[in-house]
Image 1 (cartoon, each protein chain N blue to C red):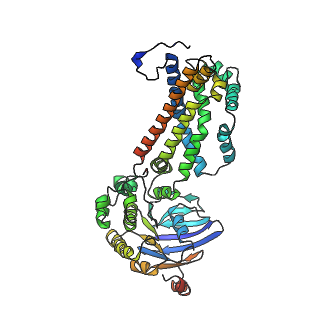
Image 2 (image 1 turned 45 degrees about the vertical axis):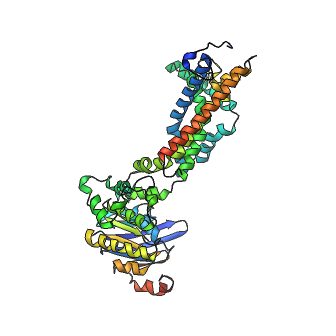
Image 3 (image 1 turned 180 degrees about the vertical axis):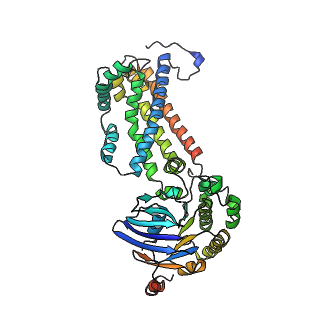
Length: 242
Length: 229
């Protein structure tokens, strides 16, 4: 592991090994899937929490926010009990559909989603709650049905907040550690994301160099995500971003 | 034209409204906080009455006995708000066309060009609402409602947030809408001169109570002292 083939062709200043590049790409893949899959349900639930009163609202709110306050190992362990190959749902899924998420990158996506979801829901909820509901009423009097009001008024006005939530969720997914290692383990090339690779390096004698490179890489990635979101939000709302 | 008999309850406030009018423009006069806005929201379908019925031009909008309650987007009733409520993420042009685009070609009774000409807002079309003055916003809000080809235009204190000079600039536009477009309007204000400028058909409102069959003077006289500004 400590042996690093020098791949000059990939012109990287950090001189990353193939395993490190694999960890980076895997992290990006998992975080991207997690963000894309979380976004639609986070928008719907955040919007519902901001705009409606319904039975069980407090319970739903509490359940969604639970991963934010629990030690990450708890949701990870619960996922394992539920969806592990011998888990309640996992066994059934495996027997009937041949689907197995435990110890695969798909499981890591699931763990990331559970952990990032509350952040995204919060961002959506806050940005929808900040929209003057009278604007939506105005649209209704102009002949827009509820679906059109949502897509033409609510969603565009909430877009900067939703985007911030997606970036937050993406970053949270990149940093996911506890739930991931509990649910899907630390398998090189399959579930060993950047944080898990850093952890592995720190556990190895002489792994400090590798850990340092991965730490710098993580910081660059986080900065890039923040810069990207800033750029996007300026493009979306050039007039309000001053 | 207007045939309304409803009871509206909002919190601990109850409004009983009997409003029958055949006039093109009906004025609804009364001080702030007596339920004028609630009535307009009820007519537009944004607030559901406790009971009663509402019809415009013989078409039922709401009837508690028959279980009819048309949603706002199917009522074809335009609403002009006190603070315009332009959509901040759309240009003036797209604000104006928002309702227009929901209509089939057959339902469109006014063109963008006609409305822009009447309200003299041609130079504003590509601006963002944030860059408009109060009077400009109000004219665009008026145009946006007109372009949705409403059967009735509700105006909720449309001039209340403007200063005297701007009021005098907007009022002639309202006259043009009445005379050139023959647009039925229900005009709500706490300023009697504004209403008188547009119509002689005035209904008074007292706290929680509207009845168009009662002579207006019986409302106006006792409340004149604190409602004449």
